[in-house]
Amino acid sequence: MRGDTVIVRAYGGKALLRRVWDVGERVVYVTNDEEFDKLAAGRPAIEPIGFPKEDVFRVSETQSRGRNLDWSQLEMWSPTERSPSQKPAGRKVDAPTGSTI
Image 1 (tube, rainbow, N blue to C red):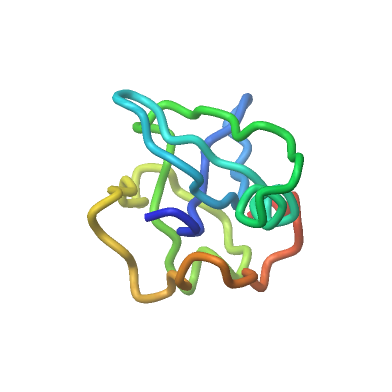
Image 2 (cartoon, rainbow, N blue to C red):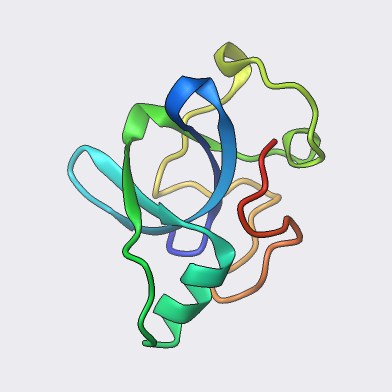
């Protein structure tokens, strides 16, 4: 779960690639790669931001390559499932920090 790469629906419907840090009752706390690495190392970092669970989606190989998104076709992310494209926690993701889909 921690370290999963997800797509979040930000303000205005903008799609962002982010890393999961934690999960609350109704939100998923996410951050970018740079801040994730700082948090994982115990260094000072910007606090992760909570997104409603319904705005957090699994990443597939096609989506991670920057194709246009159809929100209705995305699968909601779950902390108990990992898609085949997910990398284990603590490893860098190929997408640059702050990248959009």
